[in-house]
Image 1: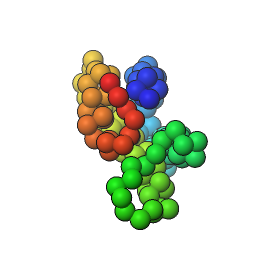
Image 2: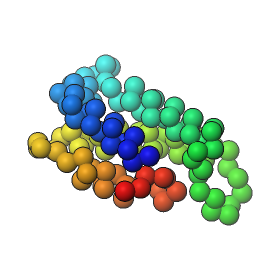
Image 3: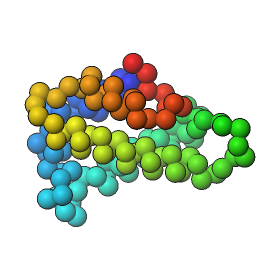
Length: 113
């Protein structure tokens, strides 16, 4: 999973000017936030549907909404991390943002370094 995330960050870095503007408040209704969050959310839902990703079982009663909440939470949070990372001075470190991102994700998320 970390290599997929690294590849996404490399793509964002290569097109930083586009993403920086597209994720800024100045982009208004044309913001990339919704598009990116929707893409990440769909990817998370696919991983859950394929049983590649399992939401941690904490022993509580099964909650059918938990996967939906998790997909929305992580996808929007990921866009927030990317937006914050793009606001840093260059050169930005992909390794540093991966480390910080990994610290923010739930323990059951399969991002490993």
